[in-house]
Image (cartoon, rainbow, N blue to C red):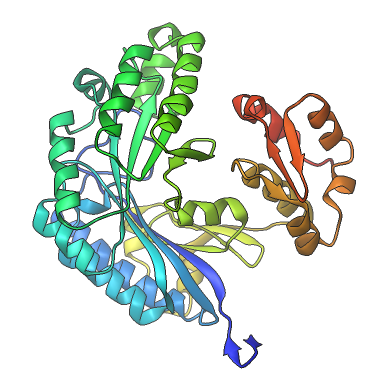
Length: 392
């Protein structure tokens, strides 16, 4: 595409999955597992071949963000992380101001490794803490203590990182509203630029599911969970972290650009085991079996057929629904102008029954061209967002 003699590249986000961890947490249903250094290194070699191969389809794109997630990406040797990013740079057009994030767990990165991450262009660290209470960490099956987190956080700052997220989790076994407020305040003393605060989800297939699915009384009550929810918004706001999405808070200018891309419909390519993609109206994911992934010859003509599965073309109805219930997760809401530009239809006509009802019930507010969830709407967002499913 040419505009005024300048090349305009289509934005693309990259998600790179590292499916390894020291030990799987008791609540975790992500695609991750412990593995030997030999298995990890072999996986990285296969991943480099995938990156190089897949890039050939996206030469008209400019990569605006790269996110190394897992698992625990920081478990890899620094040289492997450097090789991944060097291959990305060599294969894709990486924008000069691209946001590059790596998820890091306490105890998996010393100062030298963190400096190496910084040197190879990583400019954002996401630290998995979950709780500042060691008893709660032990109940989750985490491999670290709060003291070990503090040491890792100090190393992150010493390595020169100025954009740090801390992941926290509420409604944990044994947690109280008081201990949750204590976690928030202890973390805020460190002055992170971003906090992601999620409620524990009991996922099928995890040890937590076996323990708690039939015994919810062992977890904090709905009233306690609601108290934690309100405390999060209040305490973080008092410290200058504004809520910009249902579970995410940031200092101005430090919102996670990669996640905002997900919520606003930016195309993304998933690389590595089980990684999901959204491209040109299609969704698909990579094969989730490690042995199957490792056996794919990325240079063979049938590599894409063996690598990609669950390929689904989104109808216009699907895309409209996603525009609404992903965009409305953000506090800025969704734009009627963007809806019209993308779909050629007036948002208020498409949702002529839904929007007036939600507005009357004070679940959404209108500030043209935007509509957004009210605080009350955010509180019951699952219900509100389900209202945007269109009839066949």
